[in-house]
Length: 479
Image 1: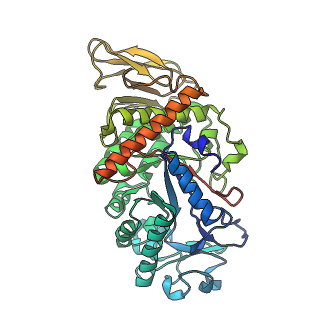
Image 2: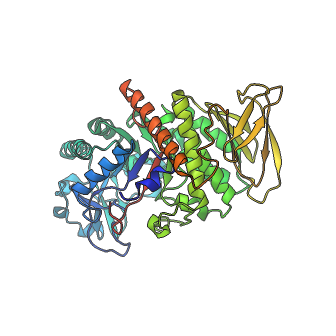
Image 3: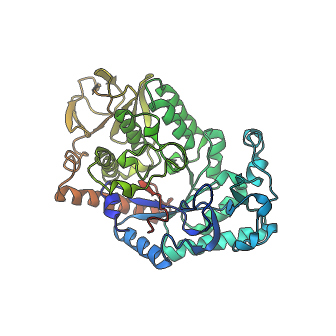
């Protein structure tokens, strides 16, 4: 709560925190439940994070900045220190009877391949920490979860939910849960196939865009990636998902290796971050991306951000702020940006150019050591002989007489173009920012919040324009 300036000054308008429920208390051979995914009592808070008053104070502090609070929740399972044979459900609340849980069976690779019933009814976890799988067809379980989430949202003025392990619960449970919550719900459907992932948007407002995540990783982790595959994935998601503007876009999270663990090339990292923020959907940045953390598989990807002393001097901190503010500026100037679909206007193996609103983003996997070259872009919708601003370098470029934009590419860096009337270059040409520019950053963030409030007043979905910072709480930090 004392470091909200650190988040807001990167242009974020929403904060997603870890699950806040009471957790398994023991220290196991797999560590402690600092992450929040081994809950044992949904009606008590994790006191290692703080008290109910602390959470209410955090919610108030976030809202006072015209920002939104998103909380992670778990429905699928409760955590038990031991294997299934030692399970004692009397330590759980309110699900303190074995009849509230599915009989034990481990989820197998064959289940993931072709048996959805096994995915939903069998157990995650292992012999060290078993994840007892709740029977969400049981009417008591359904009633308790719907009542609990309604109360949690109301008590702490929560604006949105990220829901863990959605595909492990039968799909017909989720519409009632979403309705009971009464706020935007973003489900984790951990699968890269749009035909599997997208149908869950019929039951929840949005899902994490895992199809895009996998495609971004293959496209940008080295120069062997193929941007044509990325373009095909975008097209497939647009066809399969009901509303791509409500998907959550990311390249890092607490379940997958951090992008810099796959490549040490700083230009590739900047390209994939910019693409994540400026595309269709809700951008999500995982804490530590702005510091260049490079942890691999869980738990090494869960580094604590305070180990970097919340430094604002890392160049990625400034870069993320720059790209966020490009998006916030466009929302402020043109609210239709939120729902206008992006268009792919150029692809080759190593380059892709996207147009969304007045923004043209050009991205490459050529890498920091590549030679300079130029791309010829048509279909930018920029007028012939007009001047546009490349906002990351603050360089002016003139569109030629035929409406063609010549894009100089150097050091493998992305390019982001805006018309001068839209680009408020004072905000981001120099970083760290002076006081006046910081005030403008916060003004633009607040204005994009106001635009969102107008959408809400017309009955549209929450979170159209949220730029979400995922803050991974753990027991050492608290709220």
